[in-house]
Length: 476
Image (cartoon, rainbow, N blue to C red):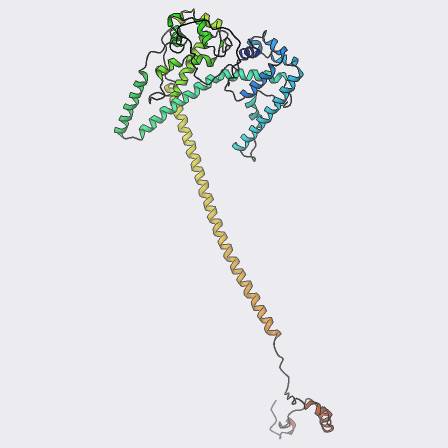
């Protein structure tokens, strides 16, 4: 048994495949039933655990597998010790080369998670909103974010505990999701009936009841994990004679990876023939989501009965012990999903109340958003009106300033071009006579005489006041 197989068994991690997959039938010679030979084969490809840190988990295991000391310690460590963290302490003795690789792997994973956290922050709240980074980091508890550089004992301990806890809760979460799916489907059907008239509602109800009857009309389903169920697989899938059924041979035939255990994936593959009796993807009445829930129920039932050490794996020893029990030989009848409603009436009532409250909250938010939109539109209209008014005022002010400037410029232009009027009578001499008057002696004398005449002499034709006869003077 390889170290990888032991680690998978101990950690309850890598061999747990929680996604429902169908097995590939093994074709054998129908004329012979021989014990399969134990021979070395290449290890199967890694199985996706369904965890969001599956890649990191597998890479850590691949690196630890290279260390001989760590591999040897696994052979003497049981599941409870692993859960308590005793195995993680052995990391101190891992070779330096492996530790260096684990350090680099952790740095890459921390960088990846920080990128995811930043993206989530941007999507949910934007860069301007406060984000509780510690709350976000709790979603990635399998890493010690206080030390993003080196892979320590605490990292391995966190990884083992996170994987174990997450896988144990995975089935519970799937059941809850299926319950919500069924309640939502029934709620939508009822709401659709409310939109129909009496005749349409009657036809729809009749069609619904007809589909239920068709779905319930199927061959008998064997009890999962019973002798009858395994014999049917032995005969129809393996092509062997049911009279030659041998539990040990059956186990080895369907231990597809040859590790000596039935993991959850391998167990679920055994129920394919039973599920095909109930569900057909081409039938309107058959729901494939319900088929996967039925597969999960069958696997959980077998695990609870056969997996005695609760390590989520069925060993060959556990399987052989179970085949000797009365429940294996004479099981009770198996009740399928249509015989067991996934939810109670009270759960349905609470679910519809929750939907009604959600609808009310959404309507209130829609109303608030509409009010905000109306208010924004009103404010926009007001701003547009103010903008137009301000634009008009700007135009008026511009016109007034323009007119005022034009008037001032016109006034200054007129004043600057005006011709001053002469004072008194002025008769300019003809051109060419001015020099002559200055050079002629007689004209000089006349000019001299004129210069001697007082400038304030009055017109001689007007009588002076003292020359008027008495009695003609103006009365003061």
